[in-house]
Image (cartoon, rainbow, N blue to C red; front, side):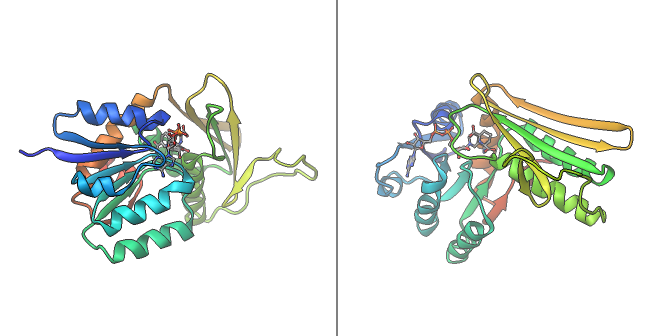
Length: 250
Ligand SMILES: NC(=O)c1ccc[n+]([C@@H]2O[C@H](COP(=O)([O-])OP(=O)(O)OC[C@H]3O[C@@H](n4cnc5c(N)ncnc54)[C@H](O)[C@@H]3O)[C@@H](O)[C@H]2O)c1
Ligand SMILES: O=C(O)C1=N[C@H](C(=O)O)CCC1
């Protein structure tokens, strides 16, 4: 069977360099490109790349995806910074290239995907919920894409269950002390040397609390999800948001 021709964008970055090694080590894939900032996207076409793994920056991702979609190259995207406007723009590009698939995964690690699923399940049963994400100090964005997505899923579950605003008697607060408000869910971002990517979802009800915690200790935690995404995206035209859609979570 012929191997999938895969290229990595952001190949010199923290996660991109790990992805290059993972693609090279996969028996069913051939690494046909490892592009960094300033490299010409045309080389993706020349090398016959079928799937691009996009791990760059929020400032670069839209241009890179526009190129890929226009050339019918599928994409697996880990880069953060997704807003409704950006997703709408991407959907417009995809409409003109209906056979092309793009997977955007706020987090490729199975534990983080499960954290989001568990938090979504638990949200309806607790009056209070806050998200704390903790990352390495080199991270450019806050809050993390994972925390933002987690808070959005929690907020949707609360709304569906008819839960109102959370109890909070705060009258005065220093700017930022209560975190960022993501659809009514406070999200707190910690940046600390020694950390990689971690998240806690704290839920509270009368007389009890539940804490759901996940820790990514190495970038290798993201690789099985990236490889799964590469294998699946070629037969998933259009936009898929979240790796959970490619997992059988029951
Ligand atoms: N979804 C996930 O599971 C997951 C996991 C880790 C990181 N991330 C995200 O991936 C992104 C990268 O994270 P990082 O820690 O590797 O950052 P990083 O800064 O270490 O790497 C980004 C790399 O992209 C390069 N780059 C920038 N513009 C480019 C372009 N136009 N073409 C090619 N390369 C370009 C930069 O030079 C840099 O080497 C961030 O948005 C981060 O949040 C996602
Ligand atoms: O290290 C990063 O940067 C990460 N970014 C993603 C996010 O913002 O959620 C995933 C976790 C690691």
